[in-house]
Image 1 (cartoon, helix red, strand yellow):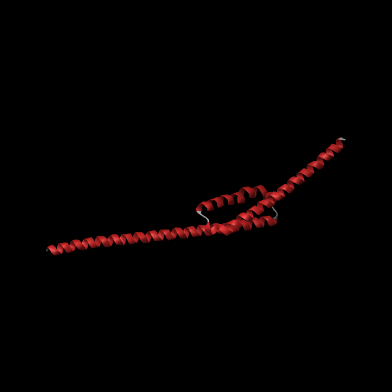
Image 2: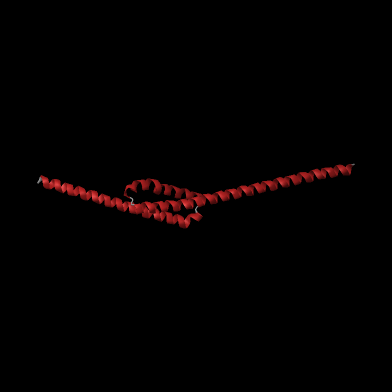
Length: 143
């Protein structure tokens, strides 16, 4: 009877371990599917993201690329790793695109501000010159 109980316990343990492994496999697959959905959403919507949306997006990316990835890493197959690498590269391309666009926009604003300041300087100089010219004319008329 003790042998039967021990045997039953061993069988139960093996089944429990196998069941947990299967759950981890499903969890890993869900992680990859969710990651794919996230990157697809970024692909479709990234051109219209606000700064706040990019911040939320980055936090979500960090969750996928660090915390969740680490949790499931020991269950990844070679195919999973390639798929995840491609997802990370694709996301990074959108992030880089956004950074370049922000830089260009910032540069454009800086140039515009510089042009406005030069214009203001020219206007002020012209006004000063006109006032000086009027003062000279007044002095000439007095002589």
